Length: 308
Ligand SMILES: NCc1[nH]cc(CCC(=O)O)c1CC(=O)O
Image (cartoon, rainbow, N blue to C red):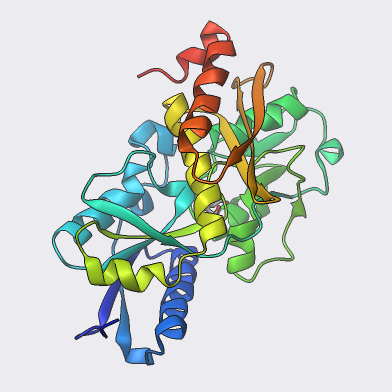
């Protein structure tokens, strides 16, 4: 494979977690291709998701807030590839953009921060989160909980908790681990809280017609992660889900097959529709059908959260 003629520009958001993930990606590329330090430069692209901190993501335009500016930078040739938390990448991507690689997935679980477990929370506990999935899963476990909006990056949320704004919050183990804060919070098992689709996965996008970049990225793709995350994203497609929608999905490889689990939950946590299946790798139609099937079994009220 030919070497890059100039340093590759790797686009990323500027949050500490995004930067950590961009550095992991750059290191993986240099290791795979024997490139020196100067072969890759990091380009920080400000996103509106990072600028707007006071409203829920769902309210202000959804996941596009994280990707739009990076998409534009790719399209206009300002960067050669973009690094994302796959959890923040919209389900339907523009034709011109390709998810070219994923890094090996980190811990997929959530951590409870503030108390050791849900039973330790006081009556009518205040729990900070801006994720509809986590809010619904908390209400299912603790119907007496009051959910308040917690946005911002990991450090901001921990500071809010420290300031006494809530009794507890939930954060992805992957983010905490990658920020060197593996000691924070109590890990919640997936049977208690099934994680968000794509949680813990880092993906790298490039333009669909950028053959050399596609080739360089193919060398660092972790195929197991790629196939599992693509199956989870297919469930989202089947549901027509957005980040307004309380959806959890997790695919794990078992004996060469994909074991896919998914659930949708009403905001008050009083209705859960779940499904589970074993699929062949790459059978995205079957994964999508899991999403559609859950919708068919949901009450009209729950189903309405997935419309429009
Ligand atoms: N939406 C914010 C976001 N996007 C990715 C992560 C963590 C890393 C990951 O799940 O891959 C987080 C923070 C969190 O959920 O705690």
